[in-house]
Image (cartoon, rainbow, N blue to C red; front, side, top):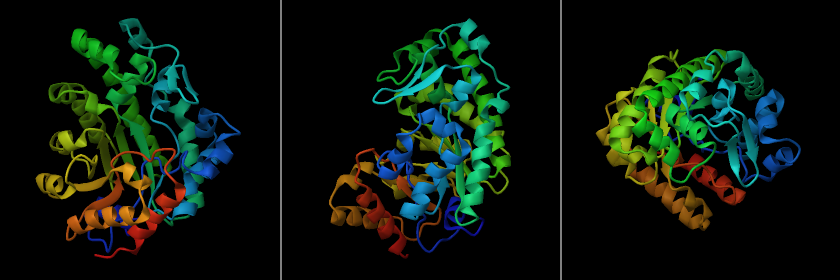
Length: 341
């Protein structure tokens, strides 16, 4: 896998073109996804290794991307620790037993590898199907993001309860974050042992935090996680919404790649990062709704901006939206694969 475009770019080696994969590339914008989803609940899909492999392979077979990403969810760690997790169409994830008191936090388990074994099993099935053609990315949710779901009991627009915990009871917040971080290290190392070729840490709600709060309640735990990974030959990607602001801090944790949102000039931020840290991104996913000539122009504009830079993986600034036309995504991948520096 070291010779694959994706791994070479992740380790800042020279590539003839930027590799491409897209966050949420195996998802609701594909009719083939719905053909599977209509027969199973979301968690059933995650927990059945064969079905998880089927979904993981959809963008490999239908889009021809340069890296696959394990089909799973960032909240499986929260469930394994004791969260009563469900997913409802149109509502999203819910924890029926939110974590809000010291007793709630004390009750969360941290030795949960056996409860996540289905993920290792899925990785083995996926790697058999990939048969060495492209790398497989594993992933986990960052502690702050997982914590926000556990505390709020689901998605939140303002993270009010989470922020109250951070500000009024920081010791409890740190106790909870430390537990999630321990589980996350073990979980990512399990994925590495099972055969993933790279890992990404998703801090999906980091942009809700101020600089000081991000430093105290997110950054230090991501640092702990990356420091604890068995990362020999395994590139580590750090992603957060808000990376255009937090990238200098993110670099201190020594990831191989920082995934950048679309609010910043990618070359400018790369120049400000330490030598040897690659960047991933950063097309605004809304561009994929636009006319094909616009899609091509924006991709070429980004690529020309990054010309001559090693360590660049094409991705979106966040995930594909469910109603983006499949043909537009496929066209974008074709444009990228035709490009040469």
